[in-house]
Length: 374
Image (spheres, rainbow, N blue to C red):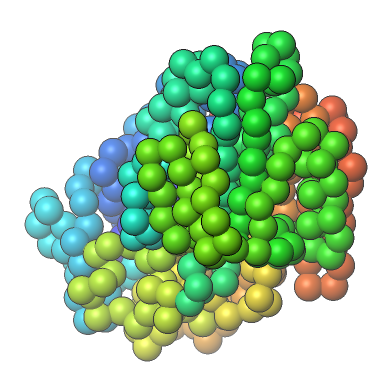
């Protein structure tokens, strides 16, 4: 059987491992621009010099060789009606089964958004943030995020909190925090509410304790070189870090896949693309049924990829057996010297106070996770 995987991020690589473990004979073709994993959670440490861009880019050539995976360096441009052909700039690719794990894309439609830095856009953006911060001797730093109004789960707020608290800690270490005004802005009155009950209060208290101003509850309308425009007035800023909401991959716009109101690929509880056979979705490119607080994060992408891979193999083998994935938000909000553990399931939520142990736990997890691909 020929299985094609689109992407080389968390979901795609977990799909590779799961399929290879259950089906040693399957032919796996993975399509991505380069045989490379960018470890996005580590971007938060680039401004402080704890990581470099090179540290976070992992060459997957040896991993693909070990797992007997063929890599096609190409850009996906679309898929056929039932997913049996993937179109790329290097030509069409046929398959018996398809897993879409290509990730989402940021909605960069707000006027003047080019004046902001979206650090999770990749290593270049995080390096640009580091260099811009180092060039400033004083000023106002503004940090904010928003979501996809048509897709509540399609947002990345956690990294913004990490950059905010991490840069606050960095400036204090450098002895120049008093020269900077840090501002957090968000259209929600209770930012971070999706992380669990009580989390917004805790986060806002942490900001207040560190002298970080907040500007909440006003719609973001645009940006200028030194300003954030909102429905409640303007925020002057010398550096703007902004994480917009997310939508589906660009190639899906013109492809016959069913999409949610927010533009993500619609999937059922088994990660199967709605209305398609032997085509599954995992990670940021998909829209999944579940609780309103479900998250776009690597942990969820891994859980979805396992379910998608197992269900695809079962369908290809003619089995009716299917499995769902659990909804679980799990993250450490790192502050450069400490970390806050947040966990939320469908039955409970947990928030631990800042601890040094959590900072080092996050760094150890990075080492443990990446060693399997190096």
